[in-house]
Amino acid sequence: MFELRLMCSEQRVEAVSEALDALGALSVSIEDADAQTDAEVALFGEPGLPAPKEGWQRSRLTALFSDALEATQAGQTLQAQDFFDGCTVLGTNAVPDQDWVRLTQSQFVPVDITPTFWIVPTWHEPPESAKTVIRLDPGLAFGTGTHPTTRMCLRWIAEHAMVERVLDYGCGSGILAIAASKFGATQVMAVDIDPEAVESTELNAAANDVHLLAGGPECAQGSYGIVLANILASPLKVLAPLLCAHVAAGGHLVLAGILERQTDELAQAFAPYCRLAVADSQEGWVLMVAAF
Image 1 (cartoon, one colour):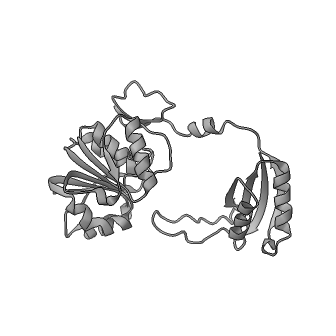
Image 2 (cartoon, rainbow, N blue to C red):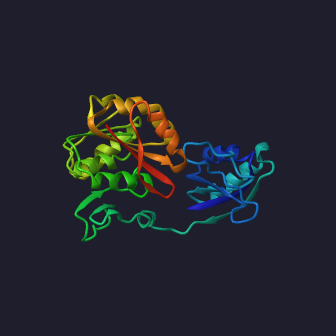
Image 3 (tube, rainbow, N blue to C red):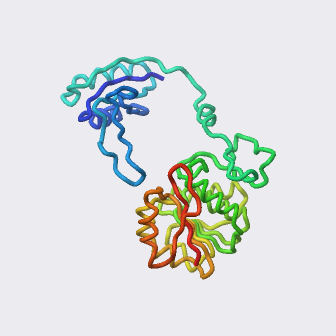
């Protein structure tokens, strides 16, 4: 494996990245060339909001190629293009062989939700204290138990008695639906607009020996004793009447993906249907719950 390293101005990054892809690059990574200096500019906005700028003033691009000749020829080809004006080829070099699977796995370790409830990747053994375990590996869908929003939802599930019917709206990996099943729910419906999330949920449910139904949002029918939705504030506000309509009398609505500063606007959006209150908080995020 060989890498081609480039320096590009903000205006050239997109064109050069597309050209690298066309030239057979296996991957292209982009990073701020001024990172860790006084010229560094943060580009990442808050969840659900666009970044303040589309690119850094100077970006360092690293493109991986299968051999040295491909990397060298790609650099030469780019230098002959008009759109490469203002860019520089920094060089090519071999990438040391690594066990990428083992390296990736080392980044994911068992996560404790409560002292007896753990999320454990399949390549780890559950801790001795774990009485309830969800086996879950990182995948395409959101929800591995490491994000504060997911952990707060899981903690709420572990600390409350599960009712017969539970709806996980925006299921991602299916982790909340699986947890509801593990803690006693007998009819769990997991829905998501992303077909890959639905597939991931079904595979993860099978791997954890739990039975649930998964599908698109249209599959959510009737009322449920507990409705879980770990999405983001903006879609939650839009979904307010729909989500509340699915909560049975005496049931609970559990919402996450909400920043602390968004608490009041969420409460106002749901005010015509229920009374939301903060039930938990972690690292700037809150869990909001309403009883019906």
